Image (cartoon, rainbow, N blue to C red):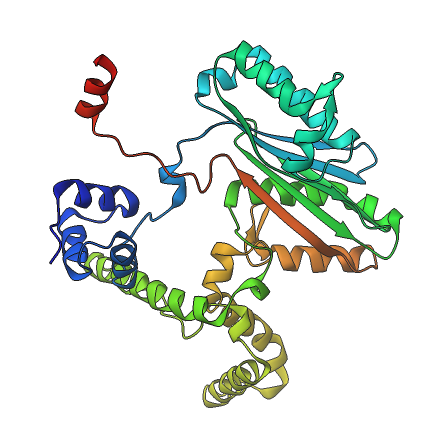
Length: 355
């Protein structure tokens, strides 16, 4: 059996926000494997915060530039070593120049940016000169460059702290209608910046992922219900399904038949069933798409109208303008996501510096 050190327990606790004894037990059960221990805690409903964001160390900015005609947009993540340098005027000037040139030269990748010419020199040489001037390592980590469809627009949003940015590309059957919805699409970008959907819709989910998440979600809800029961509060529904991709036509028809049978038993007149059932079906779908509400843009309830999902908002707007609005691309950058914090022994670090 692997030795379970206090440092390992502490690391797992920081990654999951679970209790110390729960973390130790998870590590014992998984022979000290951190990834398996995290999954163990999730399946037991004990992991409260297993998020990469908690381990982010990178500083810098997310930069977004959208053309005035909404036909092109770029977004870049440019990292620095410290937040202090990210606020430096020279660094800000580098960000602006890099972003402008990415758009104007139609640069579509970090590799192509390195060979682009800026102020008469290769970008890689320009960047090195700025690194020498600013005094910190600076890296263009990633970029995207989106062009709108012929009958579409692309727009974006960057949060005021420059740590989160979103781009959305949409199309309609006419350019006129696409321009009409620009404010709505930008508001949806703002929603995505705040609510952190990982993918556009449930079509991105694999079957294995859904099964794995279902185990974790049910365990989480059961754990919450233990506390709610203790407090004498209403319990949360433990769903049979967690995503719209599981709600086949057969599942929905079976649920509708079940609702009709219940209304019949209650003695409700059949003439009013069509006024009751749609609302009950909406409730059933909401209760059984919890993972969509957490992870997909289209499945989340809109922050500006929390009675409707983004999908419903898009559908309603399509009816209003007598057109079909289709989201083609959804891209969200959060500063440093996926870069894990380096764990240092403080005493060793100090000793290394004074040698």
